Image (cartoon, rainbow, N blue to C red):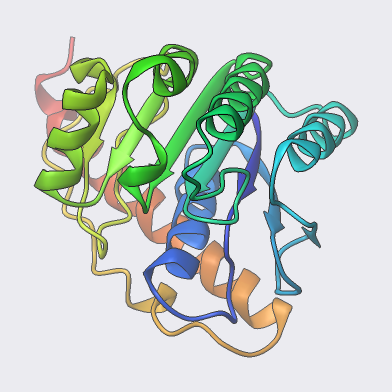
Length: 223
């Protein structure tokens, strides 16, 4: 698969900017290709204004040009969705987001702000269209389900954990428990794009090696 990874990116700091390179590393480790998009100038492949419906059209056009069939999107204010009390704007933006999600074979929403995914008429189209929601706290996961997200679409991961489950539709692998090393190489990333890409590729290789070691553990009893 080819993925668009959309969200804050190093050398910006914080958990939001760390989530995107973690997603990049995870997809590279799975053998996919990626194209990173950030809302501000960073080490991502491209930066675009990402607020509102027009940004969704721009992302759809970029996805067509890149041949992307997977989308990973960080949910936080200013990235496609706005925090607003205008019910009409909220409904329009979330319906537009649902249409955007529908063009991808797989779409993962990394939920940094659960308040942007309300229940009712506004939230229902997004909950139906997205393939998976990644929540970073138990409270956020519970809120998503309470708002209407199907429980089987909600995955729970810690902010420091970049080992989210593989994309839905991927065949299960025969392997023992995976001992992933701590994602030290992805913490406090700064500097040049080359340095950041190197760290992401190192992490992807760590993930591949950890999975290979786990698979080797079950080989004697395979078949």
